[in-house]
Length: 298
Image (tube, rainbow, N blue to C red):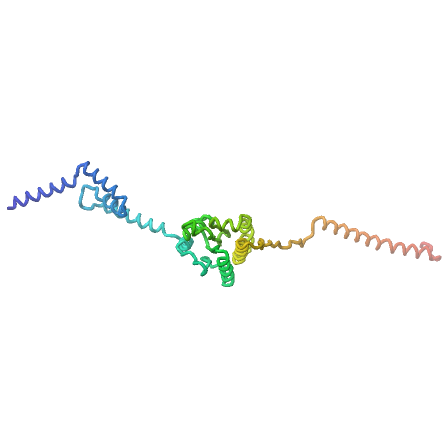
């Protein structure tokens, strides 16, 4: 009985050893099957498991444990590196925000640049515009762009996310302002851009936004830009760009020429006074001597 048990144990060990040493053709078929399976949604897990199963030893050894640890660290590192910062999170939050509903709101002030009065004024103007013309304009503010640093590209991405078809976005527009870089962008559908016109668009981007942002007048930059956009879409007269205020720079110092001129005048006055102080007493003295008959020169 003991001999039969021993023989059975040896046969089992031989069978396991032969099973673990699969022919190359079998392994090739297995690899093909795994590569096909990699196209499914569970491909990552299948590839990792088959990579760990290529060892001839069925028992996990130090190399397998090290490989598993490396895979775990790599996954953790990818998650850590993929975590967005605050600015990127703000961009993603804007993209995930539903499009402002018609007649209910037109502002996504993520950076908190607008006061309550400015927000009320802009909402009122844009609601009236939509009611009378059908154009819908959104005002978006963001503190910083990291994920997509070009404000025009980010504005287009928001527009395409909110209005994915041409019919939806044809008469829609986005006015974007970036606080950190003090930049702005205006994007929109074909009907919106044609209604505003290139001249007004260029003037807003080159004057309304930079002139006001130089003085950190964020609310004024947006309200004045909205006023010009609304006027253009309503067919009214353009209020025009702001006039840049140039501070008076009158000099408070004298030039070299002015200093030399003053110095010459002062020198002439001093010399004249010295001459007078010497000449006048001498003239008086000689006059006195000439008029005195008793003066004998002694």
